[in-house]
Image 1 (cartoon, rainbow, N blue to C red):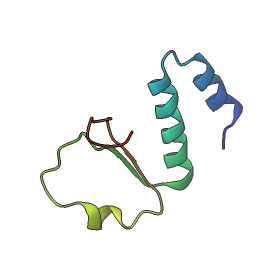
Image 2 (image 1 turned 90 degrees about the vertical axis):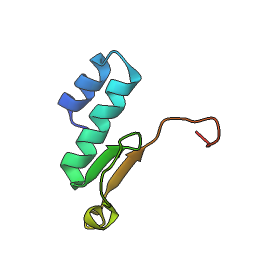
Image 3 (image 1 turned 90 degrees about the horizontal axis):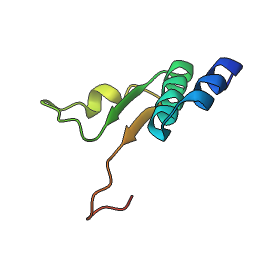
Image 4 (image 1 turned 180 degrees about the vertical axis):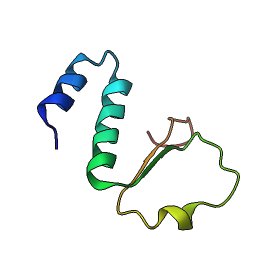
Length: 68
């Protein structure tokens, strides 16, 4: 999965966020699925729709009242 092109892209990415985005994209390409930041605001229920995927990646921004 981590072929030479992906590793090269990760090695030249300037910021850690860019590196993690590349890895997330590679996982989605390999396994399919859904990814969203939890800071996104949804306007309708969506859990049933994404339950069809084998892989669901979620990210949240650290908040003082939540663990990192």
